[in-house]
Amino acid sequence: MAKLAQVEIRVPTGFTVAMAAATGAAGGLLVGAANGAALVGLVAGAAVMAAVAAIAFVARVPERAGRWALAVAGLVLGGLGGGAVGAVIGLGFGAFYGWFVWWIGTGRYRAKLPPYATALEVFWHHAFRVLCGMVFFFLITPILVVIPLSFNAEDFFTFTPEMLHLDPAGYSLKHYEDFFTNPDWQRALKNSVIIAPLATIISVSLGTLAAIGLSQSHVPFRRPIMAMLISPMIVPLIISATGMFFFYSSLGNWLEGNMGLSKDVVGYMKVVLAHAVLGIPFVIITVTATLVGFDRSLTRAAASMGANPITTFFRVQMPLILPGVISGALFAFITSFDEVVVVLFVGSAAQKTLPWQMFIGLREQISPTILAVATILVTLSIILLTTLELLRRRSERLRGLAPS
Image 1 (cartoon, rainbow, N blue to C red):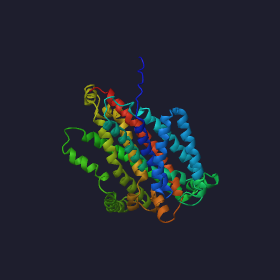
Image 2: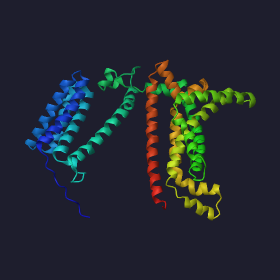
Image 3: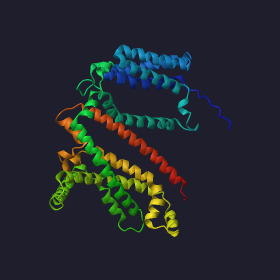
Image 4: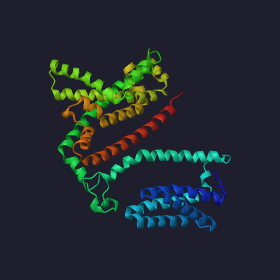
């Protein structure tokens, strides 16, 4: 197939200068606010970028040379004003503005839009993406700040001068070493590793069966039952924890008095069951979403060939809804592994989990080790969420292949 020729769009220089000034003002405002001179930064940023855009397109500066010049200028100015960290930030600003000026000036901002799109439609197209980027930045920045702090060589929760100057002496792995050698942290990790998988297994087993049952059209009162089953993720957690405390206290006393179980075993059972209750709604929702595209004629065909309901479930239905089941299991596992409120009400010191130990590290001991633990949990969450996304795409492909 022949390649379509790219049509160059001529953009007025005034428009390019105005847009460059606006983005320069935003960047200048950030830099100025960080140095206590927000208004000066705003005006200076707008003036500098307007001048850069005017010179670049009036003098017809080649794009590659202009972008390199802005990146190097940002690197040098940032290094003079803020050392190594300032140089990195300045390099990022310079590279971004170098790309942005020529992206606007050459008309590439309309490249993926229909030629009949109005100016308002073009503006909203890009404004929507900027807003999404700002929301993402607002959500992710507090998490990313924890990661470099976990390598702090000092027992502080703030960046030290050595860290800001990228001095190797300001970084250390001692907080990670404390996590892997401290018996309190290892006991909490062991409890989390025991409780979360058990709660996940119970959540997946009960949640999958509930989702399949509630997906049948002949089941009476499906909506009220569904509302009750997913209520733990709607009701405030402190209310659920209070109710679980009274219920599982009575259950624990009965198990200890009549079944002869030890207090520790009963404590683990209570926490596992409480976390399973919190995980079941996620399994129900994900499996129900997968069953929406499930072809019921497959189960009827299996039954007509002599397969019993159990064989039909494991050989026909389960392989097709497996991505949704695994997704629900991952959500249930994350919920159990990160939960702290319910375990404070239901558990005891013997069932102290990793989030509980982190809570103690903030409230009582002020231990910087929680930064290393938080980094490990963030990494684990990223891996699990990536797996969820891959499973979601696989589920969509399977539903697309299923006959309508």
